[in-house]
Amino acid sequence: MAENLWSISIDPDESMREYVLLQLKVRAMRDMLFRSRIFNYLAAATPGLKELVTIGKIWELAQPNRKVKQGREYDLVIVDAPATGHGIGFLQTPRTFAAIARVGPIHSQAQQLDRLITNQKNTGVAIVALPEEMPVNESAALEHDLRTDVGVAVDRVYMNGLYPERFSNEEAERLVRLAEGENGSVRAAARAALSEHNRARSQRAQLARLRRRVEAPVKTLPFLFEPELGAEAARQLAKRLG
Amino acid sequence: MANVGDILEGKGICICAGSGGVGKTTTSAAIAVGMAARGLKVCVLTIDPAKRLADSLGLKELGNEARQVDPALFATQSVEIEGELWAMMLDAKATFDELVARQAPDEESRDRVLGNRIYQQISNALAGSQEYMAMEKLFELHTEGRFDLLVLDTPPTRNALDFLDAPRRLMQFIEGRSLRVFMRPTGLAAKVAGRGASVALSVFKRIVGFDLLADLAEFFNAFSGMVDGFQARAKRVNSLLADRRTCFLVVCGPQGEPVDEAVYFHRKLVEAKLPFGGVIVNKVHYPAERLRGDGGDLGKTLVEKLGDEDLAGRVAENFADYQALAERDATNIERLARELRTSGVIRVPYLDEDVHDLAGLAEINRYLFASNEQREAIAAGRA
Image 1 (cartoon, helix red, strand yellow):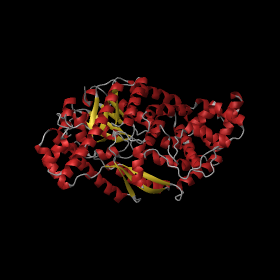
Image 2 (cartoon, rainbow over the protein chains, first blue to last red):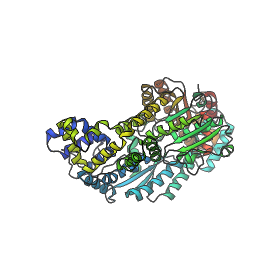
Image 3 (cartoon, chains in turn purple, green):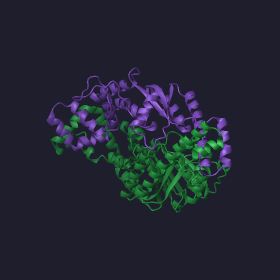
Image 4 (cartoon, rainbow over the protein chains, first blue to last red):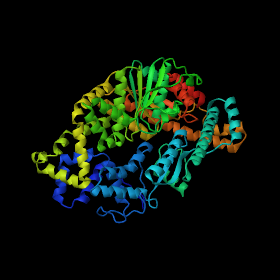
């Protein structure tokens, strides 16, 4: 994507294939396995196996000595995880799986993945919130569950899409008077300014609530007034994070 | 057309579908409130574990049983509930347990299933079980006939399609016909099925561990007496979804990606021959009222009127930013209407305050149940 930056989209079926390839050295056996309906069925049917191989792939990407042939070595792997409701379950998959499969190679591998997730020195979660009432509530609950139920470190909370504070309260009052006395585009512009002022203010209140309710440090990212967010927008935001 | 009230005229079930983060839960609640205000007995169901619905309806919590919302709560928002408004939050695990209890031929098979570790995993966490149970609960409430209208807030799947697909996938899993044959303790099946299958099975056994496989086999055996009952029920659920008194509403946001998803989801609905009712776009930046050609020297006029160059500059810049977002939204919505071949895109504006309480619901409600002209008028007043 750019210098020192690569991206990958993890496909659970492909990860499953890769996993089996690493487990089985005999080629004929692998081919037979992939052709076998029963294997595909079992792989699809076993609860949590898809999520497990997905996390397994993430683990593999983060290894200093990649298992996959000609795999690049990464200093940092960033995962765009599933949304709140599913996120906790996703991160708990290895532990759940280790409990279902009590013995065997997958049991120990699942335990290894769980250790990867809960190793607070190497793995951390960043929570991303929006400056609205319910996302703030959910982020606070998520942080709590991640810390206590999953045992993963929560390093940072990002408040995303924060409107700029363009107008002071005193200016807003002047704009109210302007909107009342005018028509056409002047009135529309004054009203747009007042909308912005109200949103920015209510967002600051949410930011303060978030700071009170989470333990991890909170960083903010500005709302970008761009019709579509692309690579340039990502660069702008990256600068803000320093 | 149209407003939500017209779209839902004569309907018994309204399913709100869409990807996560587009305000589906709030929309579902607002629809239920509006229909109850029109005199219907309405129940809104959510699967969202984040308690969003309870919050927005001013309830402390919701359970797996429907609860009536106090109409007095809405009187303060000048919304008069002439019918009844009920709400519930689906407990997928409890619903699954009830379903097993209902389908089991006897107590022993019921207990075998409920006690099986694979079952416990599936009913709790397996992708698709929430969706499946949502359909199940919907079917149950519909069969009871206690309500005029059921509004379903679907779970926040990353891909809206999962919602339609999940129940089918879960059913396939539960059926597990081919698998049961292979896992009978006698091992006879392996011989019948040939070498390929038996090797595949033994390799799988080696990878995941024998006891996991044994648990799976036990699960399918325990379930075997219920498969037919489950299938018959699934068939009835499917025909309920396709019924002409059922209505799917697609909910999305005005950005490019949510609109793409809405288009995709609409296509899937059409392919599956499910009744599409309309699309609701939330958080739309409305264009400011029609400008009468005086936009060109707006900056100068603002300086004159405000007597403050700096402030005027910021007001103009802010206005330009909002107009750009409004233009983007209008373009995306045009595309949406074209792709869906509908003129009935219901737009809900991006409100100054975020919607999380009864006052916000009441406001959203005005848009959902207004005619197109009324909606424009309300928006122009606030722009």
